[in-house]
Each structure stands twice: as C-alpha cells, then as structure tokens.
Length: 170
Image 1: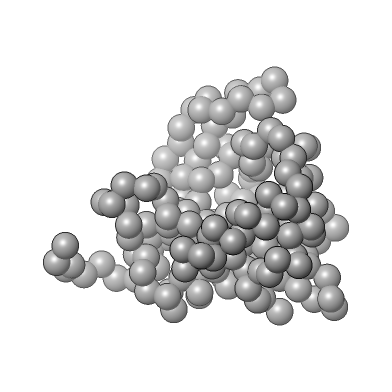
Image 2: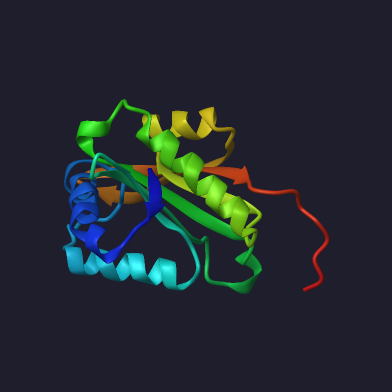
C-alpha cells in the first residue's frame, strides 16, 4: 500500500535514509539525521501541498518517495524534483518502481506541476535504469559537482513530463 507519510513514520524514514547518507552516494548529504529532523522535513513538504509517500506492506515501511519544488524562483513553479529511497532488505523487489509510479500518479492528480526532475548521483546505475524504464528523458550530466567519502561525484538529470504543456497566462 502506498500512503501519505505520518509523523509516526519518521524513525523508519530516518533509518532508511541514513543508510544512504553513511554508505553510498545516493544522497550528497554527509551527516545522518534523527527522527525529529525527518519529521520536520516531511512536515515541510506536506505543508506546501506536495506529496511524501511511503510504501507499507504487512505493517512495515519499505521505502518512501517525495516531491518538492525544483527551485525557489517563481519561473520554476511548474517543475518539481522527486526522490525515492528504499530499505536495503527491499532492494531488487521493484519497490522503487512502485514508489516512483505512485509519486507520478499523485503529481498528475494534483495538476500543479508539468515536469518532474530526478537529480541522480552519476554512479547510481539502479536509479538511472529506473528512470529510463519509466520513460524519463536524459537531461544532462554535471561532472564533479559534489564530494563525499573522498570522491568527486557527478549528477545526472532526468525529466518526466507530467502533462501536456499549454498556454498559461502568468
């Protein structure tokens, strides 16, 4: 079941996320965070009307996905950035695919955004394959824009059109 995240999910979300913070480059964040900070982040996203979803089965949260505005400047208001994280024990079970599909569906239903952006660590082949599988388009590579664990890191950008572009009177 994919549902909205709640405050009670924060410890599990932090546990899932901190694995990536501490052990690989999926996130460029370098300090782990506690449940309180995760609760604040979820609340901030949801308070703005954006989705923060969790995938729960048999009473266990296996992963999460969320979206937020791509950039703060007004011209970017129709573009959001999405992220997906799954627990280690669920890798290879298509959890990320289910979460990303759920996020896309929620964003389409909401209708505020036209484009979903994925900013992915250049060495994260699983996320790159997932974006390609779901029909995202390659949007470019930025070399050596981050540094973590003694290594320079690239990012690759993928974008997904959520709906047809139309004339908008700003």
